[in-house]
Length: 192
Ligand code: GLN
View 1 (cartoon, rainbow, N blue to C red):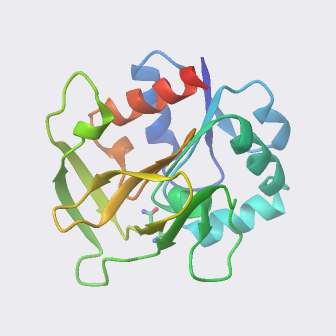
View 2 (view 1 turned 60 degrees about the vertical axis):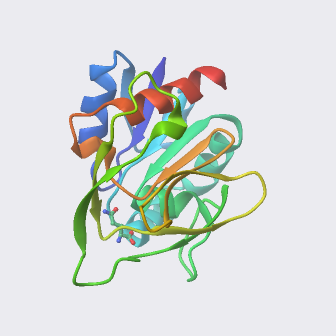
């Protein structure tokens, strides 16, 4: 199984480390032709406006969109914004997932915080709370079509969602030692 991590900007190296821990073959992706032999792709956290602009400059927007129509793809934080169909403002998006996101939804005072999340919906072997980092994180404000919520905060706000082979998380599972979210993504890659 070969998993690409989009490496234009942001926290791509951390995802590669997690994937290697799970025994996956990995590749840093910067060019459209590098998508050809991948089974799945992760779009990391960073800055969604910068990454979107680089996707346009590198002529990756349409190839990435096509890839996501046929393969498993996971966006963390800025990556989740880029997967969405709507982010309430004009910026390049992949327009793949039937979700509407609100950027920087937690305001300035709590730009970053940590939370223990209930991930029992993933049906993994261990459903111990998942310790998650939120860094200027978006919220998944609403979902349309087939998209479903996977993880919510205690107040009900959605921080992980799935739409078929597409996965979005507001937080950064690559910044913990906990590989369970990466495992879940690999199970989507296998199914697809
Ligand atoms: N706030 C960033 C954005 O809007 C996302 C932050 C992150 O990826 N940690 O793109």
